Structure formats: C-alpha cells, structure tokens
Length: 352
Ligand code: ADP
Ligand code: MG
Image (tube, rainbow, N blue to C red; front, side, top):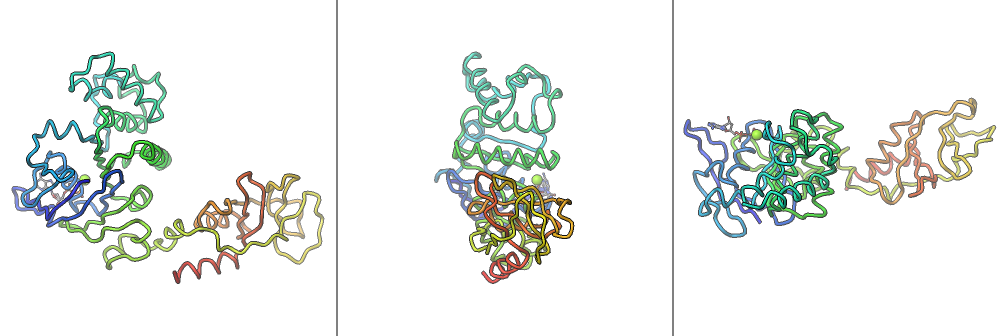
C-alpha cells in the first residue's frame, strides 16, 4: 500500500504543485490520478519514487517512509512507465526490456530470457526483440515500456500518461492489455491521466485532483459517476456522465419482446414498424420495415445477462429501428429491447 500523508510540494519558484494530499493506494489495485493539466499529477507520482522530494508530509510504502529509502533501492522495487515510453534509442528492444535486470547484475542470458518472456506477456511478436525502438510503432513502443517496467517484477508500478500519445484504437487495446495483465499480476499501480474515460475504465479507485494539487474526490468509478462530490468534479466528468454511468448498470431490467423476430421468408403483413429478420439458428440478419421486407437495415446486439445497459443503448443507436437485439452467448436472438423498453430502463437508472 502507498500512503500519502498530508503531502505538499512547493517548487523553488513558489508554485504549490501539490497541497496537503492525503490518500491511500491499496496493494494490488489500480489507483488513477486524474485532473486537468497542471493539477499536480506528475509531481504526485514522482514523489513516490523520489524523482521529486516532498516539501512537507510523508509518503509511505507499506508503512515505511520513502524519504528514508535511498532512491536507487527504491526504484528497483518500483516500475515506471511514461508517455513516449522513454526507450533507449541505441539499444535493441530486448536489451531495453532487460535494463533493470542488467542493473541488478543478472547474467546476460537470464536477463534476456526474462525480457523475452515479458515481450510475450505484453502481446508483442518476439521477432521485434532484435529491432531498435525507431523501428516500432508508437503502440508497440508503449508495450515495450510496460514490459521494461515489469522486468524485475516490482510490486509497484507508476504510469504517467503512458497511453496518451497513441491513437484511440491502439489506446483502447493498450488499456485492455493492461487490465488483462493486472488480472494476472496484481501490482499496486498508480496511473496518471488527464482523460476521465481512461480513469473510469482502468481505476479500481479514482482520485480527482484540482489545480493546486488538492484532492477533489477519491472514489470508485461508479460512485464518482453517481455521486460527484462537488461542481468541479461534476464539470470534469462532463455532460455524458449519465451515459457513462450506464456502463455499471446491468441490462437485467430490460423488458424484451420475443414477437418481433421473424424468419428470412417473412412476407408480412405486420402492424409493427420494425421487425428483426433472423436465420435458422436465430442469428440476426437485419431489421426490416414490413412494407419493404427485402431491404435489410443495420442492427446492433448486446449479450443478455452479461452486457451493461450502456452496451444495449449503443446497440440500439446502431440501428435505424432504435431497438437493440438481445442475444445469448452464442449470438442467437433471445428478444428485442424496443425504444420504449430502453426509455423505461433509463428512467429507472436516472432515479437510482
Ligand atoms: P500535471 O502532471 O497534472 O500536468 P505537474 O505535476 O506537472 O502537473 O505540475 C503541477 C504544477 O507545478 C504546474 O503548475 C507546473 O507548472 C508546476 N511545476 C511542475 N514542475 C515544476 C518545476 N520543476 N518548477 C516549478 N514549477 C513546476
Ligand atoms: Mg503530467
């Protein structure tokens, strides 16, 4: 566990970057620091591994003040990942990953074997090991950065906007990879981002900071969305807070209609404005309006009992019918959530 106990950082020019910060980052969990630019996220993170020293207050690592641990020893037990990966340009990927093992005096063979294991772990092709950083894409470099931080198996991982410089699709896959890794590794992670969506996706708990380095709220994502502490947090969460919150609500309450799915040879008539055509295995083929049964329109699906209300809503928005097709794990249609059913569920969610 990492403990911030009334930590203040005042830079030489008088800037108070962090002001009386107190919080705990529990062992084995991801704590995200989020807030606007200049709110003291990087400063807070770097005080943990003593790249910056606190002016006042204490930071404890499992109860021991970091100020009493010499920086090289401290940094061996703390992995650190930054935005542009910070790889050494003239070292091969495998040697970049083996940096800390080399520093720890491991023999070259063992260090390289460990590096290869980690490259695989973070989802990289082992062929990349013999390349140099400039020969990799931004997303691949970030994965190497994560592998390098994990090389000596440190219990703590500090990540400062590690995915902020890559495009949204790569970013999503890096986020998912991190969650997958964390499910195996259970590191104590402090993750810094200015992106509230990233914070909500990755955090077991999220610390929202305001400029001046003051803690506005510390809460689990779900609580943050449902009970923002004040106007600043509300504003920071943005106008689609309500939509984001739906990610944490199960689709369980959605009323489904089973009479709107029709076979491929359906020719009408019907009083319904929209019908969902399914094949012999009840897999969806498209929406039709009964007066034009040959024109199949796009559909969206969600897995009943597994996906959230948000996914169901996204599925409805994919289709001109405004309805979502509920499917089972095999993809077979089990019913249709109509616009009315979604409206009802959203009204219940808004009250809750
Ligand atoms: P963030 O990572 O949230 O963007 P930082 O921790 O980098 O914020 O910075 C917090 C505040 O401290 C900002 O006002 C920044 O300008 C200031 N700051 C950061 N580093 C220094 C420094 N070395 N000297 C003076 N002020 C600094
Ligand atoms: Mg920063």
